[in-house]
Length: 471
Image 1: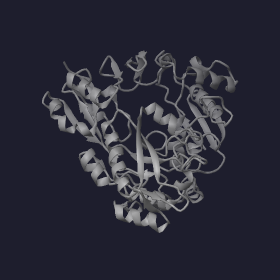
Image 2 (image 1 turned 30 degrees about the vertical axis):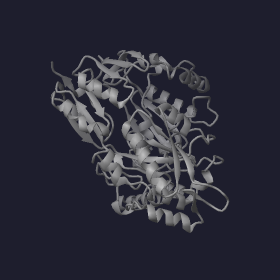
Image 3 (image 1 turned 90 degrees about the vertical axis):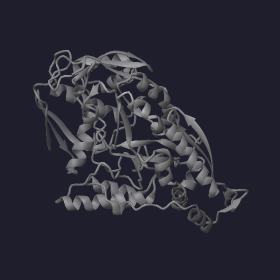
């Protein structure tokens, strides 16, 4: 049983108090939207994370500022709180509740307005509220006059879309952007920014990056990728050292498992994620030991299958494009022929989540940030059978190890032993190909203060309300 308390000081930007009714509204929406039969654009992608909603026996409003959640079965407390309850952000029920207890109609309505910028003009309980939005151009936020936390030190916050890393660099150089980011390939030109007083600093988020493999059942090469030795050979052909030095200019760390080594956490165990040495010769030997031989420069088996794949990558970032090109060149040395196709991020997400598409076999340019849902970094939303980011990967032992991390244990030592077993098996099993963990390279204008202190890359939630600008 868990009691959730909502502080009485919090107000929506329209002056109304944030109450248990707002939290219950979110609960009912998540509950209805998680059903397999929920209308498009549902079901809710977070369904199942942290035992939400199926693991909840009852939700009771005790008073205007207290709600009690009772679980069906005991669960790991950290997993339930940081992966489950954290999803239930209160929503302004008085504005959004259009259909009373008819939750099927309610989630259909919410789905219909979800992509309309006007929706974001609803009451906010954060430090800012939306003033205006121009799709693919800018979002303009102004301080929430009723915010009970640290009041914003600026009177306007503008989020500007940039079409590419070069466009962002230009905006930083001309001063039209006060806080932005550099692509690693632009580090050689960073002096152009620092000469005018701008500050450049790097930080690691709790994140994991990968090259996805299309293992959705029935797609072109799903059966090939189901073989661990194929995945091992491909990982041996990824030169992480070269990616880190030549593309990220040292602003990245090697990664060979599901938990990042930085920032430091109790969850990372270096022994559970041993390096997989880059070796084209060993990769070729491994393939040959399973009946593959080069024919006209391409690994071919007795059935005439070839290791020929199409890899899509997220365009707009020169670093991602260069990563794809370097891997393509190295894999070619071991007889694996890969063609490349750059797509924008929205298309990337659409294609890689299409369970029937054989238009791609590999995909690079995405990853997972362990902030918000996922702070307890187990693999339920990543590697479990049916996981939205798993791209068809399925392994019963993996499922068993993940489920074990969700159980409560008497001591922290027992909890970590179970977690380490999950981490070690996942690292070795290669549900996806591990890639270096890049740092974000941040740039703040000379006139922006508090940018570095409050950027907070570890959680991915910058405290913009504590930053200020001098003129």
